Image (tube, rainbow, N blue to C red; front, side):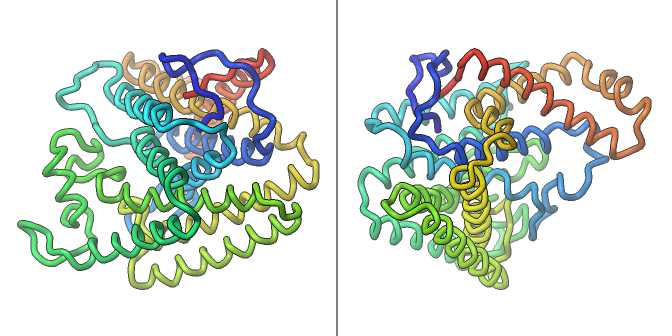
Length: 366
């Protein structure tokens, strides 16, 4: 994810990011991680506007685009990072897994019941798989791998009977992925269900395909073509992928929790379209001032995600979140707006910290 390898502790003070990285890529990454913080920190989960909440099951909302956008960026970033050995890439993936496990165990550290899968865990696995695909396969090989992951996952989820249940199905608790999660990780799943996990084992395979789409986009951006050609190519590919995802969704529904193959194509297409727009505005058009806050967040993306998550858990554990929310927001804002205001305040609070870090040229990387 970051272009420089940190010290063995994995989070270290670094010099400024490499100039080889596109400003638009940092801005896109910053948009994704700031979106994560926004949707993860409402004042009241019962008062969330629908665009800032996940779809209940099939379908999508803007919130359902955030995580695949980040994995897409992981793929793009691999093509722009300094050449890294397999051992270093494996270490980086393991550090991400470790930080993710730490976050879910914090602050009680009850590892007997804490969640095993998670956002950073998936990012770590997907990063390493995409890195190996880049290292070991040519373009044609990666195209074949992407197709196999998507078609294979579709066949597995819609053709293989579920043990103890019966025919294959795509319902929350009875699909094959949920059965596998319960069988291998029972007692360590997402607390919102305890019977399946949105970052489960099977759905990680198509998630790798999301990063592979980012790899293709990154290689296109690093090609010798003109900037305008690159932007037009991303727009065209994005439109085709989005349309393909919508069409496949008629048979294999777009579903973030299952990370369906149609979801991969749809969100990969949307990511390519947005990256093309940001690339055209920032890198080609030179409109860097408006993108500066996003770039600041993007250069310290892991810091923003981890620190904001640990801080939120600390407030909840000590019972401070509720009075802060009630006193500073509920006391004078109407319902829903007060909850949104709390979420926005979280983003602004952490942006102020990242802005200071950027001024001091402090970048914490993995």
